[in-house]
Length: 333
Image (cartoon, rainbow, N blue to C red; front, side, top):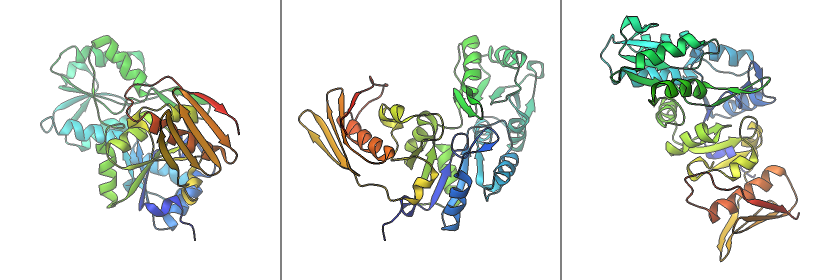
């Protein structure tokens, strides 16, 4: 019997926004797919950059959507930020919270003292996403960070977040506002940094995990940095076109249309370097790269077409550190 993609892994480290849900609503089929994976003996943990909710609240939301899980299987960037601060500060040190109560709770649990005003003389600022944040909150952080000795840690720098009505500004836009006002840049605790992923894998005792996410610049880059296999799912922010044009560190191991893709065989793609570029073939498609031109021939599933296209393009352009010019794609299938 042909093996599925999931057979190669013993754990899924899943993003939330854009993978499991968009806002309060589940992405169609996602809860069932994750439960099915667990029924097959594959552990599932949730690694989220959302620092506005506690792990208990996140777990409760997932359960409401039909996912079998608990708070022990949720790892948040708020936890990662608190741990990063605790590693650099003495016990009881005051930390200005620019974010939600969930971030303050994690900071307190790490042995530090959360405060809300510069007048409390904090020695650090912890900044995380809070949909109710107002200008005064950002200003308080800027006033505090005018002192260069004050440590600044951001839970994450996602510029966008998928919601039920579309794509909205994320924590990165709020961090950017403070950075513009202060001329400073924070340490970043969550994705795309690798510790949040390695911590999750170790917590599960996993030896062959796979990170699944909808964002190249956080989920995929972070998993790659942690040297963990990565799967790009096309239900959130990034598109097939952006995956094709990804820089090297953001190129996923796998591309799946939905989480159901874990239960399907993944095609073996034959790739070769040619005198003019590269050639890839699989699943009824042939992709050829010549310079900045990508030619596709064949017919079949859209996801297979893009898998083959990406394989050829990436082999032809193996070492890319800045976003390249998008290739000209000619589909002759």
